Image (tube, rainbow, N blue to C red; front, top):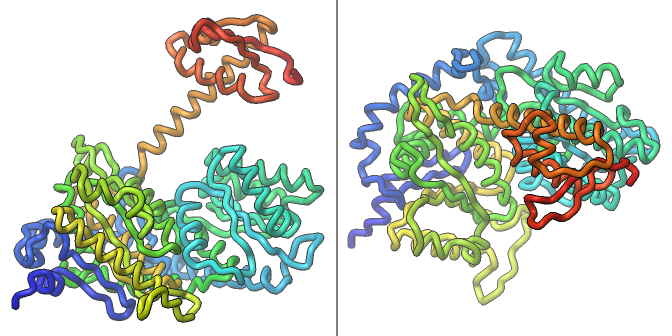
Amino acid sequence: MNDASWNRLQRLSCHVPALGLAVDLSKTSLAADAFTVDPLVAGLFPAAFRAMEGLEAGAIANPDEGRRVGHYWLRAPERAPEPEITAEIARTLERIEAFASDVHAGRIAPPTQPRFRALLVVGIGGSALGPQLVADALGSVSDPLLPFFFDNTDPDGLARVLARIDEAAGLERTLTVVVSKSGGTKETRNGMLEAAAAYRAKGLDFPRHAVAVTQDGSELDRVAVSQGWLARFPMWDWVGGRTSELSAVGLLPAALQGIDVRALLEGARLCDEATRVPDVARNPAALLALAWYRETGGKGLKDMVVLPYKDRLLLFSRYLQQLVMESLGKERDLAGNVVHQGIAVYGNKGSTDQHAYVQQLRDGVANFFVTFVEVRRDREDGRESLAVEPGVTSGDYLLGFLLGTREALAQSGRSSVTLTIPDVSPRSVGALIALFERAVGLYASLVGINAYHQPGVEAGKKAAAAVLALQGALVAALEKAPGTFRTAAEWAAAAGAPERTETAFRILEHLAANPGRGVARTEGADPFSALYGGVSRSS
C-alpha cells in the first residue's frame, strides 16, 4: 500500500543527528520533489548561501548602516575575521562565568546580605525577549538567582515586578543587570531610574547592586564607571539586539540564573554547522526559508502561527516576533525599490491553542501557515509521567493533540511546518535560536532585503520624541496661565502646534488622569470639548 504522507515525510524532511533536530515540510504546499525541482533551489539559493558565507567572513552585511554582522562568531570565535575579536569573545565568556560563580558563592554579595537571591534584568526588545525566553524555558525552582524583568516603561508594570521581588527575595538581595547598547534607549533608561529610586527608597546603595551590559564608552557605560557599579560587560557594534541572546546580553543573565551557557553555545554551534551546508535538502534553515517563501508567495501574503506544544516554550513566539518581523519587515529592498516585505508572527502554546484559535485556523480565512514545535521528552526532571488512563500519560495526550491538530489542518488545506527537538535543554534552546537566525538571513537574501537594520523602529523613536516635546510645550503654556481652563484645541494653539490638536488632546487627557502632574480637567458637552487647566502640583 502506498502511504503518500510517509513518502512525503521522507522526501521533505531534514535531520541533524548531533542535535536530535528535525524539520518536516511534508504538510506544506511544496511538491514532494521540491528539493530538486523547485526553481529557488538552483536559482536564488546559491547566491543566498554565498551571501551568508561572506557575512560570516566579515563582509559588510548591513549596508544601510555600514556594519558587519557577527552573531555567528559568538559560538565559533575562531571564525571571526580578526584575532582581536576572537580573543574578546573568549575573554567575555570567561568573565561572565567567573562573575556568576563569584555571585553564587557569595564572593560578590550585597552590602547587607550574605548572597544575592534575585536577578532583575532591565532591557527591552532584544535585550529582554531572548533572556526572558531562556529564563522561562530553562529555569527551575532550584535556580541560585530568581529572574525578574523590567521590559517596558509602564509604571504600573514596574511596580508589580518590584512587588514580586519583595515577596520572593527582597530588593536588598537583588542584583540588577541593565542592558542597553547605546545607553540611550529611553525605556531602559527609565527602568534603570525606577530601579535606582526603589533601592534608594529602601536605604540601599544601587551601584552596589548594579551591573551594566553596554557598548564601551556609551552613556550607560559612563554612568556605571562614574558610580562604581559592580561590573561592566561589553556589547559589540557587530551584534544586533535581536541576535544578541548568545552574547553577554543573554549569557550573563542565564549564567547568573544557573543555566549552562556553554551548552547553549554548543547547541547553537552545532546548528550553525548544519545550516552552513550549501545544499537545501541537507540544510534545516534553508528548508524553513524555502517553506516561508512558498507559503507566503515571497511577499508575506500569509502569517506564521507558532505553536510549541510545550509550556516551557510559551515565550518562543514572542521571541520570534521580533527576530522575524524586525528583520524582514522592510519597506525597500537592497536596490531601493518599495516592496513592503515581511512575515507577521503570532502564537500560543499547545494544546491551549485548541481552546483559543484553532477553530479559525481550520475553518476560517486561510491567511497563515503553522509552525509546530514538538518536544519528544515529556518532563525535564527525568521522572516518569503519571498514567491518566491505562497506558496513556498526559504527555501522550499532548502529542496526540499536536498530531491531531496538524492532521485536521492538513485536511482543510492548511499548511504547516513541524520542528522536532529531543528536549528543552540548553543545547536544544541554543539550536532553536541559531536555526531561526539563519533561516531569517537566508530568507532575506531570497527576497533581496537587509535583515539587519530597523529604520521603522528609529522612525517611531523620533515620533515619540516629538510627542514629548509637544507635552513640554503644553505644560509650559499651562504654567504661564495658571487657573485658566481651555479646550485641547486652544491649548494646542497656545503651545504653537494648532495642527497637532489630536495629539495635544491625548496628552492632556493623560496628564489630567494622573496625580501630581499639575493638570485638572472639567467635563464638556462631549469628550472633545472638555476643558483643561493648570493647577498646583500638590492639588
